[in-house]
Image 1 (cartoon, helix red, strand yellow):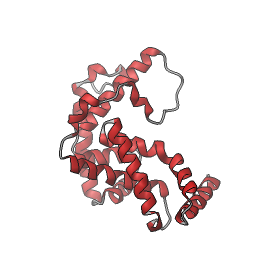
Image 2 (cartoon, helix red, strand yellow):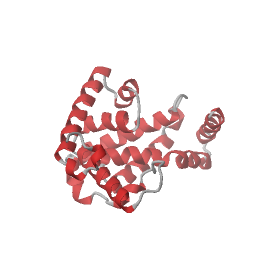
Image 3 (cartoon, rainbow, N blue to C red):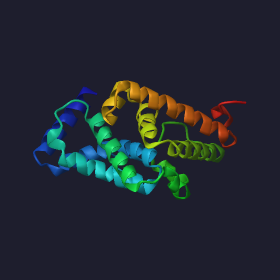
Length: 201
């Protein structure tokens, strides 16, 4: 792990000096991670891909402003802001995308380490993924941001607060409302979910 961080720091230093190949190596390292964030926030593949691309373009332009620390978290903050700006520009709720939701294309996301699923398990996973994404899409933009960063990407409350530019108490409040909304949403469609994911019997 220290070697990986050292290698990353070297790539960042080279990229700051204008080495495009070094920056491309950073993009390759984090493209799946950034796409998973933008996909969950934007709710559809094309918007997620565009936002991921914009994230790296912005990161390249602002690379000289990166003063060290957690590069991955720095990229995640840019991705979050990029998605937020795009959703604000669209001035429409994410449900407008429901007809465009990908089916099996959802597996363009970084794969989860697991045994190879059989066709029934694959179908259940697709149903669960669709149900989760539909519920995430139904959240307000602010709630979606904190839910994705905290519960999907695993950032701490403090890290989420820093990334979305909000007070810690505000983040906790938004996250609490988002989790409640997700629970209600998933209960409404629990017949689509595999039994182990059902919230009530």
